[in-house]
Image 1 (tube, rainbow, N blue to C red):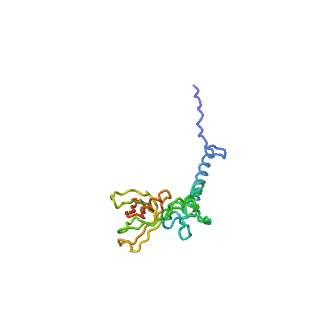
Image 2 (cartoon, rainbow, N blue to C red; image 1 turned 90 degrees about the vertical axis):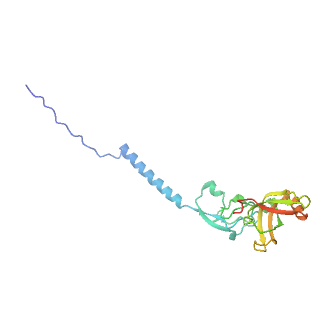
Image 3 (cartoon, rainbow, N blue to C red; image 1 turned 120 degrees about the vertical axis):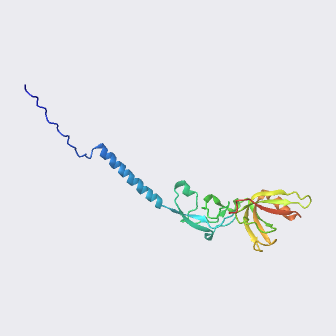
Amino acid sequence: MDLLEVPAPVAPRLRRPGWRDPRLLSGLALVAGAVALGSWAVSSAQHTVPVYVARGALVPGAVVEPGDLAVADVRLTGTALERYLRADAPLPEGAVVVRVVGDGELVARSALGAAQDLDVRAVAVPLRGALPPDLVAGALVDLWLTPPEDGTPEALAQAVVVQEVADEGGGLSTGGATAHVLVPQDDLPSVLAALASDGRVDVVPLPGTGG
């Protein structure tokens, strides 16, 4: 009986991938994308813009001078950058502060405006007793009147801004200190009348606003 001859198995030969191999092309695309993303991240991290920062509290009515500002390099782009005052451009001529800018805060363009747009007036209020530690420029205070007749306190103005505190006694005296506060024009008549009366006008700081 004749034996059938079985052909010997042929081992498959591995072929080197060509440039048109989809797997090679997708791998190259992933590598190129990773390199581009890394380059973009490094470039973005190194791209900063100088903007102005308040060196101390800026209060409404104050004309901003270069000495009132410091410069900080920040990473802002687009509309976010447009909101703030850039330090690589001239200061707006004739602009004054129209809202409180805290110490160390970025100076927003909206915080500056024209003097005629201010709706407040500075009023000097004598202080009694030791100065509270949070009674500083930029803090918010309420004004209260205690009439001499019945002694029942009544509110004169709320959340007004302290422009400055003048203290001749170094904060320890029981007199001689004055708080200059920015009173809205609508409250001005009642505040001035209270100061001219025999009653007592007290300045009450709002907690957390004098930092």
